[in-house]
Every structure is written in C-alpha cells, then in structure tokens.
Length: 117
Length: 108
Image (cartoon, rainbow over all chains, first blue to last red; front, side, top):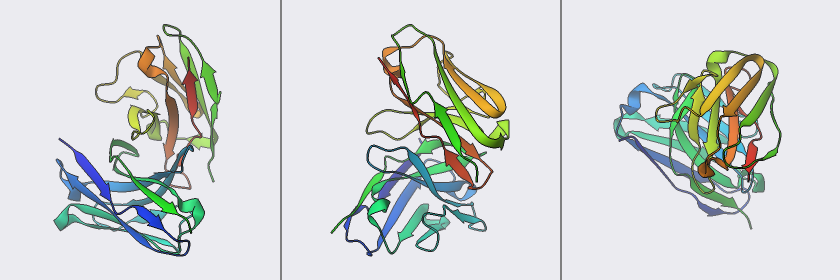
C-alpha cells in the first residue's frame, strides 16, 4: 500500500524557516517524480514545487521561488521542502504527492504550516 | 502563464441529478495533461480523471471527462450523496508547470 506521511509543520514567525518532510513507502520512491502542493485555509489547491526522480529537474512556483528548496533522499525514501523567509501568505496545509504523467494519484494527509507572530 | 477557470463556482443540485462542471484554460492544454480531482473537507484531493477522459482506479463510471484544447468538462451522471463536495481541474506542462483551477463546489 502506497503511503505518504508529511511532517514538520507548525507555527513559525514571519521571516522564519521550517523544513517539511514526506516519508514514502509502498512503492519504488526512487522511480517517481514528486510534488509539493499547498492549500491555504478555505482556499483552493496551489502547486508549490516539483522534483524529478533523480533530482535532475526541479521547478518552483513563482510565489516561492528563491525562498523554498525542494530535495529528496532516495536512499531514505524521503522528500523535503526547506522553507525560508516565510510569510503570512505561506500559511497552508502542505501535501506531498506522487507525480505520474502529469497528475497525482497518491497524496499524503498534509501538514499544517502557520506563519504568524 | 496559463490560467484555469472553473464554472460555476457553486453548483446546486439534488441527488440523482446530472452535474456538468466546466474547466476552461487561457491557452490550449494537451488533453494528455488535464486531470480532475475531488476533495472532501479535511482530506487530501483524490484523482478522478486523468488524460481528460480516463477514469482513475476505483472511480465509479458515473464520473466521466471530456474536452480538448481549452474547454474540458467533468460530468457526474447521477449524483450520489457523497458527491456533494469540491472538484478541481489541473493541467500539467504549461508555465507554471502545474496549475489548478479554483474549484467547483457541488451543493445540495
């Protein structure tokens, strides 16, 4: 069974940093590209970042470019999102998701990031 | 930059009725890279349709997708009580790499 478990969310002050993790199991993690997608409270889905299976291709949404860094450790079956210079508008539930052919059939349960003083 | 627009924002229907949800792109999207998701409150999105018209694993056949170019449609042939939630379309490939529509809420 495919499982994606996010962790690392919490309350952080504006300008602070946080590192999210996504632990993957039940599939060959190293063979799949991954996304981070977020959802602000009461709002829609927003794509954040993409990383290919061997980290050779990385993309970011303009809203996080230069502040967030996506990475993965295939030996540990883990995906990461380093978030720096956090702003109030980064407050959201952050989901990791497996990417296959441009869509995501598997998602984690999400981790909440709250940026507030 | 590609923008996806979904209409209507809210669709008020009754169980057993047919629902037609629209997703319009600001520029042409490859049909291979248009997907639909549903999302229940407090849960992660669930893939319904990929490649514009292919049902994901385990999705009932009352859900169908169609369309090409800039206009895509998700149809729910007969609404069940569990279908009254939010639906998103998503494209892949155009800048930005992934884009979600704002969502359509199907209301009783």
